[in-house]
Image: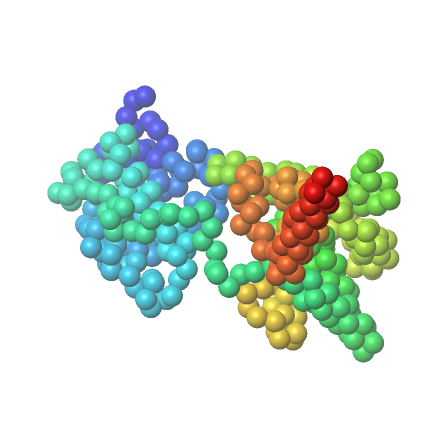
Length: 375
């Protein structure tokens, strides 16, 4: 490959022999543009590219220096402040440091000629400033907040009951808000019914529900086709089909799709959960509704929308469903990932212990009775 022809290379963004009015700012800007182009050709999502770009800009503003002036000590100070002053999560801090690492890797790669360009214009060049010895090491697969947990079955019942009570209360006052409240209540129940993530649930269309020939008792709602599953880096959303397992789920969905959803004026809108002002409901609206209900019930903040998914896995395992089936339902590539979500309750552990103890005692008695005739 010829230098200067790859996406993100210096020769594609700077013209030789042309003077710049603000050379430092302009060179930094075009390096960022080259960094973005290089990521886009790797098929990374635009949200990922923009997030990394914003992180690099934030670091540049914090240290008040351009990339060819950066040092590892600047990274130390920046990450230290992020942790001590802003109290960011470990995973967030690591993503920030990885964004700066990726940018430095790009800017120092001879293939893109940015180091040579900076040396020519400023007498110095970018170096890699993010190393293993000045950043946290990713040593375990699960870095979620320790407070995060699934609902207990009693909490989940109380939450769904509150959802229904709110619909009845708002409707009793003759307010239009009962329709969005009904929509959100059904959406919450659906997220639990199929163990779906927030965006997976939000992006469902009415056509994504269908029959399961091996579960005729569920009627038109025997399966849910998830089309916007969590994607791997550089890949499109991952699809999966989730089978209905709870006998109450079809009744909830049928009431919504046949009786309530048409009242929102959904002609031509394919979304399962249409918004009053747009195609479909937004994440912020879901979060605010969830938090309002959680606080009204006095539940702790260890419960979030993702707790529906944690609860789905936990409750199926507690009820004796095959772990491999549960893994396939939630779309985990590895069983170890499903195990992270499995937070079985004390009742389940007690029943499991009792079952094994009873089996041991029964086996011992049977063995003893078998020896009695020969005593």
